[in-house]
Image (tube, rainbow, N blue to C red; front, side, top):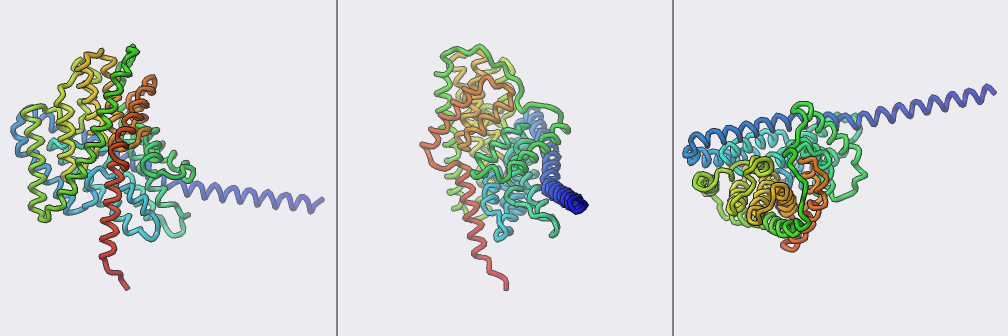
Length: 455
């Protein structure tokens, strides 16, 4: 009898020890993700406030003395491009292709390559470059940069973990950082998760689902507590649709799908042509010309083409000024191409959303639709254009739903995403981000091959 009691106590002691060890290991595994998510939330809010101040400063100055931007815009474009070229070449563009490339390279053999794409210097250059170009009127967003910044934060935390710490997958950390960055930038937690699955990993969700969910939650709550509850867009009026509204949604879906995919193709073509400019002076001249073209269009045609385009979305959705002339979306797209082609830091999410919104508003004006039907077409345009350039229909739909907190239009948004995705796939197999990711991988592998090995 005493022997049985002793065995029972020994088994209980072993179970408690095993349970405590598992709890300790799980806690140690979770802490880096929590820390990264908290820091992502802080950076996201800080960056968003600076970005908003830069946009407001540009709007105020342009209203007071628009002619000054014939000097300000080219100077800002040049400085934004120069700081990237000088200090962090892979801080250029949105940052999402760099993150995708880093995820693909994330293994011990390629740590030095991942560090080229995600490092501390990139965080600060990304912020500086994008703030300078947005103040100068560049048509860029902060969401792509936030994703690269947050992935770099998570990657840095993974790098500094001590030797005795439980091993944590660098790939999982980078993916979670990207999802947390998008979630905190747009206040769209579901969008962040779906984006990570649909756009970044394209692999088995089960391997990192707990870390991903935790990272998105902590980053979102941090941003929410610092900036307060908010929707990226707001609560547009969406009700009383005509049964025939689907026949207006179909052309919006097709036009925005073609527009998004076409814009990506043109930017890639410009990048290929830019490679023929071997001298820095030629590259600088190209950047200055892009700035002059944008400010000329804004000053003489429509100043609403400047900036991220969030004001276009809010004006058309929440005021009586709902309809836009046909040339506004054309100029928005052209301005996005000119801004992104410079090689300065800046995302393409917000410009894509605003281009799609302007297309929806322009078509609504041509069809003389009601205010609520116009709101629906604007949101469908946003989904269609973003789907066209990213080929991520689920992410696009869920982002817009979370931005407006209105689920009764989900059918229309899904139809738009489906049609836009079909038409954009007919125009090309790979997305804009896929092309850029492959380009970065080729560059890094080529440079690595040229570097002589040590020892």
